[in-house]
Image 1 (cartoon, rainbow, N blue to C red):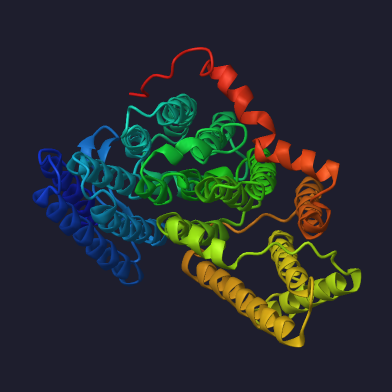
Image 2 (image 1 turned 180 degrees about the vertical axis):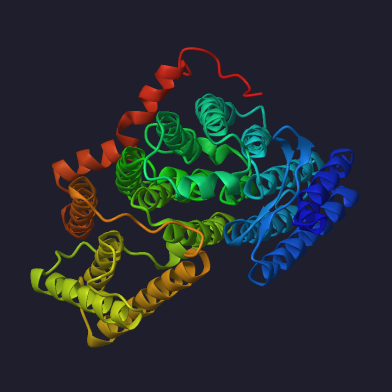
Length: 523
């Protein structure tokens, strides 16, 4: 590709420039910092959209390397990086705009806006990486830049504790990624990602070095996306400003999924690594979902939801559903960023409208809800081309949608039931089903040509899928019956244990020595 392929680089460069300017503008309502960061984020978004529009016309590709001997800067622009670039700049622009009012009156607002801009710039360099050297450097500096935001208020002990734990976990992931990158460069003789993916796609069997690299990539993804048992820091970041929690979903917490998808052809060479990814992701998804239901703080509940959703994303990657994982990254990022930024109003809405329903669910109505959910899944799925020839992995993930719809219908049928409520719920379920299959089809069309298809499910793959589906079914059942049994001694005790995350975080605190020594800065 020509030098013009470096145009996307203008986005992170503009953000770095804005960060340097904003850093020097101190005091309350720093006018220059507010103006330059707003202009830079809007400019970055425009560049991202323009770059994305060129991909269908040019087919994408990798820019010339700015550097020498495989070390340097290159831009990889394809469907995946274009989607991530638009996502990161869009969320970044919203968060920066929100922070203008949220931090108004804070004497450190200029520094905060600078750190926001710098972090977004680092994420952009990560998702646009055209070579492995740039990938790992961007991976590390993104983590370090975000660490600065976590301890923005250094006088808060809990913020320092969360940052300290994240710093320790992140360094394990960085080490794993560094060794993996070294092994891949040694094996393929290049750092160019496109060349490595092409070579990996043509392999029938992976060399030992590549197999080891895939397991190390799994470790990097697990630590980056706060998977069990490294999740503790994510649920303790509530001492940071709310915009930081929203920015977390702009390619930072979900960078683990991006890493696996970006190197999908390499990952497909090791079924064992994918199995571990699916098992850890599936367990974390269930673990986080259970704990989330017991939280009384809106922001803490959202944090546990993120832990769970990142697990579900990695479960999809482990099953080889890479395009669906990218769709999950996009939709979850948009939803969760909005949820954090509007968390204050959520509290007011809940106080005004939420009343727990403790009526015992009727078996017949729950069964009817399951039948309606299955009917929607099959009916809408067939309209979008779902058939018996579809990969089993798609059915496994889709069955979790069925459980969600069943829970929705079960809620609608609890207490006093009317045809109007059930009809309205059925319409909502239909909209959800159409959106699910429609977006899935769109993701497959957009990314299917560049990502490997799932392998034919073997005995072990089917066992993992059965375990995941069965576990989600049990949790759905417990969600349905829990309200009517909430006052029993068993459920009260179980709720207390779940609300404390089954104490996994306490054990992790002891492991890193956080409870025995004063928490220090992560810097």
